[in-house]
Length: 530
Ligand SMILES: Nc1nc2c(ncn2[C@@H]2O[C@H](COP(=O)(O)OP(=O)(O)OP(=O)(O)O)[C@@H](O)[C@H]2O)c(=O)[nH]1
Image 1 (cartoon, rainbow, N blue to C red):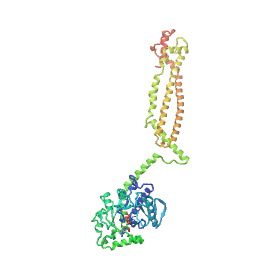
Image 2 (image 1 turned 30 degrees about the vertical axis):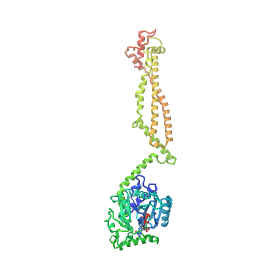
Image 3 (image 1 turned 45 degrees about the horizontal axis):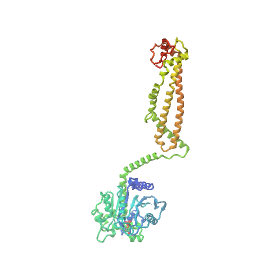
Image 4 (image 1 turned 135 degrees about the vertical axis):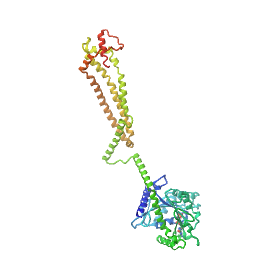
């Protein structure tokens, strides 16, 4: 029993949290709607408010002739351990009502605040919580009474408006329908049963309640209905005897009314055999038990819905961003985390996982070799140029050994050509890296909501890349220079030992001072690129 109460109490708390957070149901699938509730449905003056009050055990609902309930009243009953009984409205959360006459007045005033003092209706609910040791944990919704004709002061559409409003509550699969029918009316004409049958044809969530048993014509009784023969529902019918208008006028106490109701059934010749299953106290217990059963069945779907909602909210939080800490240390930590996230994406571009890094290989595999092929070695090592360089460096005479100075100048000149493509490769790699920085910043999800940090990271990365470019240029130029200075004695010995090759035909006319030996020797020098 304790578990049952705490279970329904928990659902009540979740419902209350939903309400406070603005989830009143009605907008798609909400948590509020996933939780079961009980809606009280019936024709005007059928006794809906009276049944609610009997369940609660307090007078707190506005009474009068004509249409009294003009806005849905969402009533949450919370069973408390201590003796204090009080009520709270969602629209006035700071006020705690201990006087239930004041609760009645507030419901009436709050209804008028939206609808004016007219007979109009509104589908904006009033939320009321009652805390008491004498109630069972339940959420009940009191709805305007179904009517057949508009009375003076009401729009022609009111009949339809009320029906649509009531239907919007009872058609939800988690809504338990408390269909109120006065016993002094033919069951076949009951608006509540008609609507309940429409939205719940199997009757599994409909509870039939027969009020005003005491007002039935003498000699008639409702056993046919209460025993389930006249109109069969899946759940048994419950008969109720509420306070009459005269009782209300005489301020008959609710406790007294409950006792009188009990006595009525116990002493009734017609309903005595059903006495233990009649009355508002029994109805409250029945509803509470049923609610527990429904909640148990719904727990898996409620859990999965809550989990789904948590996931969705987390995803949304990630999208809009989690709060940024106020203190400097935590902010620094966060900035470092964001930089690390950028770094991770940048590395993925370089090392694989994301595209772009392969373009650096392209620079070395294609661009650099192609540029080297275009270098003007043919011109530089032409017979004419070789002759000119060798003559300038070593003088005009046949050489016994290779003309060392000439060789050195020719090789130095050739290798110097490498500087251009090498520097161009540095620029090309720099360009690729700069582009990858831009892409990585755009692709780092965590940075999306920090545009100025994005700019700062871009600036810092580009400054670093610019520095690296200068250093890399100096390094590659230095490497080229080192290569050209590395001509050992061994190199010249090997040259001297190498067999003579036929000179290339490069179209250069022999110089006026060349003899055959000289030409062959110069042509051989010009073949160093091979
Ligand atoms: N004698 C007797 N009178 C009842 C019983 N139930 C309700 N009444 C009276 O019927 C009248 C209407 O009852 P309400 O409980 O206000 O009915 P309602 O369905 O809430 O009315 P609306 O909200 O206006 O649609 C009141 O005067 C009640 O005293 C009952 O079981 N026996």
